[in-house]
Image (cartoon, rainbow, N blue to C red):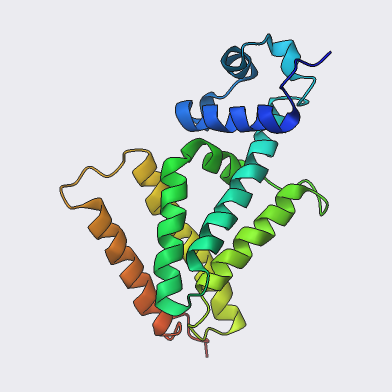
Length: 196
């Protein structure tokens, strides 16, 4: 009989919290069982395996990220949306490095996977950050890839304690967002030119 108070959602949330504390790569069913005060076999009544737990954490993380960005950019467009959304993503990754790492490592298992729907939500949030920049469809794809790469790279480096130079990290982040804003306002005019 499953332990009272434990359910797939509560086990997943506890796993996400533990991943944030110790790092996603160190998460194990044994450590989670210890945290919850149960024996490891008890967890398998609620999640099928460590990969199943990791996937569940990924779904939670990507939905939380979509919510954070969506709330931050509500009613904003252009630079205002970019700044608010970028700050929301940065805060989420720094505050939740383990669960963010789970989301980054996961891949959808099929069209009915809740992770696929979560990815669609975060992609829509990133797209909303780009509204007001008048990008065509091809430019938007490039801009989305650039935005994710730049923001994820900065935030995960910060979360991992990788910035050791003397300059203020907040100033560096503002500089990065200003740089992205200038590029987006240029409308991708400096992008690849057709060969001739």
